[in-house]
Amino acid sequence: MHLIQYIDERGARAVAVTENGTTRRVEGVGSVYELAQMALKGIGGIGAAVAAQGLGDTLDKSALLAEGRLLAPIDHPDAAHLHVTGTGLTHLGSAATRDAMHKANGEKPAGELTDSMKMFRMGLENGKPKPGETGVQPEWFYKGNGHIVAHPGQPIPSPAFALDAGEEPEIAGIYLIDAEGQPRRLGFALANEFSDHVTERINYLYLAHSKLRACAFGPELRVGDLPSHIEGMSRIRRGGEVLWEKPFLSGEDNMSHTIANLEYHHFKYDLFRQPGDVHVHMFGTATLSFADGISTKPDDIFEIEESQFGLPLRNPVQIQAEKKVSVTGLY
Image (cartoon, rainbow, N blue to C red; front, top):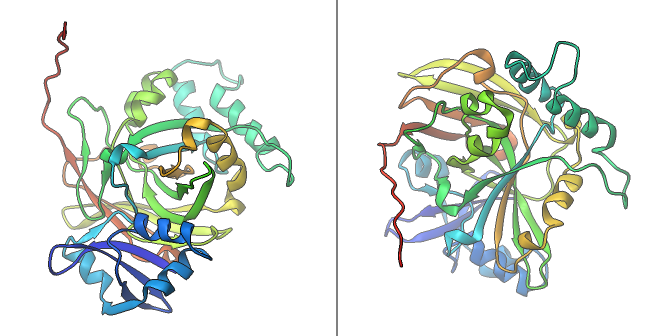
């Protein structure tokens, strides 16, 4: 089962579900958040809530995407209560580019492990604990809240001060915190974590700055568990031509951590278990165009696709105008 959010022909928000190759409107709801709240209050999960609401018209979701009417597959009525976070160095091979970047900056002599490689090895050794045991915590970062999310097909803005505007093809877990403060997983979606790799390369301590950028995820929310093997394609189009493309792998077969371990180390903090909040948590990648020497330009189009997640995620990159910021006293 896949869910989408979209704008209908009357300009109103709507939700649709895809099952067995057919996409139909879910009656009586304008958001996946609303549908998930119904699921929390009823018997059964998202599927039962969809069945209880009933299905309406059949839709062409590809046409909705082409017409710019698809929204991110979940949002929150108050954007400040949607948290976008992520983990890094979680995939087999993900440390190679980071390690080379830091050694090139002279952070460690040849033959000595960088902090990135040390953390990656920690994941290899104890990122997949046995059930009931706690594994090693991963690298973790904060990206922002619901205000940074670009809808499928819409431009991903890059600030004027950014030194790079690079894609990161990932899988994001989608969660809603229930009334008892427990995280409830709705499913997973394709994501473009979008980072400033040049800023990160200056010094590893700039990683936090490099992650404070916009992002996109969707277009579809795949309800249920994550497939153990995910093999998609990430590409950049420029002027109608493919500038760069490369496969990306995800799923636990290709990771140094289990999803459960990554979830535990995010939600162990009380801050991230506030009832009603939504979390979009990105699980990392080992594939970057930046690692192949690609520098994006305005209007380049990022494209991330994997058949198990439905429609591809496409977004052009847009450079924002410089914004003057001044701090004044209010006293």
